[in-house]
Length: 341
Image (cartoon, rainbow, N blue to C red; front, side, top):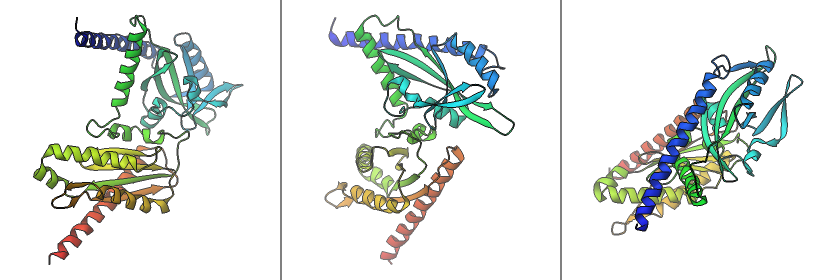
């Protein structure tokens, strides 16, 4: 059998195996839900209730634990009180930094269960994160996430090569969830799930800057030179943005020719310098050498020294940056029109 036929067959086998594991995981979620609305599906627990719930779940799953994902802390219950352990929650995955995709942060933000896969020592683990509140007193309530971790059955992976390919397939699938297909930068799902807060940051940053960027006359470029040239330019623009921000920062394609650049732990007096630098790097992209035409863009930004993990604050900052960008665009058009009067 030719090699390419083998490769196609093996990929189909991997897809079938993935389907089996998804079914297996779904059954486990059903077990969690069937534990009862009064247990897992409730969100507020007393100390006694959460201890009883965790003890029961520990008989079903490999790991059951409480975490504070904002501080990457493991929480334990001792003598009727919540204690924070010295080690970080990501240590269980043998990582040196915060997980790039933290289902518990996503769950805490969305206030609903979130899931993900993790890999450790050639094993696949399925993680379910459920946001909860632990009531200590009438005035003292601890916000936490209940993580339920289960090792996924790998009896379908007969050889080390199949196992390695399967891990690669899951990693690739998980990565593509948050990647813009055309440009390779992050997408709006990445933005909406607050993954930019976790990106290369051990702790959730408080200083946050959102830069909103819109390309000038990009519709005209598409109409004049064609969409293939436009797509090629968008890829070049996206990679130029990535090359000129820090590794801890995030470049997101917001839609069409609009991009969001998120800077973490950046002081406000540095933002305009960063915008001017990006404008200069983009202008270096010449898309018509005969007419000497270059890429230009309008920018706006919003900044917070005390970012709060909430969808409302995120949307407010995006709207503020968008409004500032729109004002710059209007001024640019007004200035351009005045030169022809």
